[in-house]
Length: 183
View 1: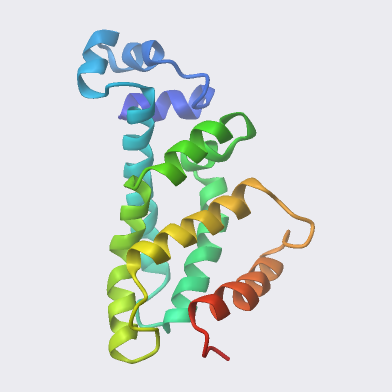
View 2 (view 1 turned 180 degrees about the vertical axis):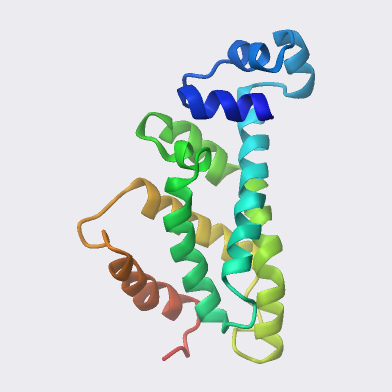
């Protein structure tokens, strides 16, 4: 996967062929296909690896001690800052790759699972403290959060250009939807 990351960073995801990646790895293309059935599977593996690293980094910056609402808002805002700047994940949201990124990000559960693993203990703690609805599932929450993130990352708006504007949007729209009793 190091070769794929090198190629993705050098020439972009859409411009990196399986042949390029195999050459970078010092192997035949047929050998690469033994590990990954196609380029999408390779992209998913790289994105999952990079998402896990990013999730660990974000978890350090957002202590679990924060309230559930702070954890969600801070996590979303940090993701909105970090993802575009990330050398690999940021490339997933390049305009020429939106068809691929929407198929990979929204239609597979690989990246969702990374987020689920992060939010599940936070939801459980908030549920025990009676701060979230009992029926709130980590799976549905993460699916929705990824869709919101994907939208904010791929469809910029004049209304939500700044960090504070994004915070206000998330606090005024996301929190009431998640926590109807949130004030």
